[in-house]
Image (cartoon, rainbow, N blue to C red; front, side, top):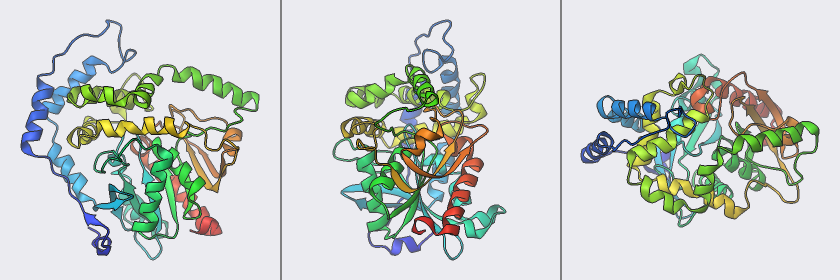
Length: 396
């Protein structure tokens, strides 16, 4: 455990424990769920497949060991600090060697910091895994406001507002002069705003998703074809997004009352957004990993407040980074996973939004890169950081 972080009077240690009675109640709710029906030709086309969800729930009740997962959570240096009035949780892992780069890694929805549990130690201590200590990072992995172990904002915050909170965490609480930011899903949007509005403190960003848009739209036939395909692909994805961006409170009453409901809502995304074949979700996500993430939402009672970020983005203006067409000028690395459900546009389009210094097209992998392909993501972050170090680019 890294004790020096707690010499900072603004930072306090945090551990998470769920009462036995709470675990008992959750198991009882799952065991007694009133199963209904699904279309005969359903599969996963209508949403979460009931046969798989029943299988997952049997495992949940009889075999899932929450205490083992809880111990894993608490094995990290978990911290809390009040940042712009929000009780922010973050994992802190001080890197090896003489000059580890501060690296803020940020998750999205329906994820949590649990996405990074297999990534944090290799990032911070590469020499323990056959790597070079010169590649070490000091890793800061916050739970986004309203998610999991962090407190909620007073009202919905979008990624632009959240970027300001995280920059305050990095610069005012942890007192870094500069740092590298990495993210997928909402983390990708947050990192975009960090690079756009909080440079030079945010000295560079690394993305494994493209969420932002240029106000001028596609300019080439290739870009136009991408937009048509993107819009077509998103037709069957937009239901949850629209609900959470417009009436999240209405959705919350049912979800907060049903562990199985939360499981179904989240598992559907891990199935449809991951790089899998033949509907085999467990080819990339074990039952333990799925249930750990689900249980974090349930036991922290944050399904509701985690969904607010969609409402917040709608209020902030949606996906457009700059109505004037300005771009993120800090060095940007892009890890392009082919099964990303927010399918990447051609690089020519992305170049108009970011100062791309590294563009890596991966052979496989989907939306949850840190869980699906941690070694690929790790290697790409290291490569990007090396290029920054060698050129002293971005002040790192």
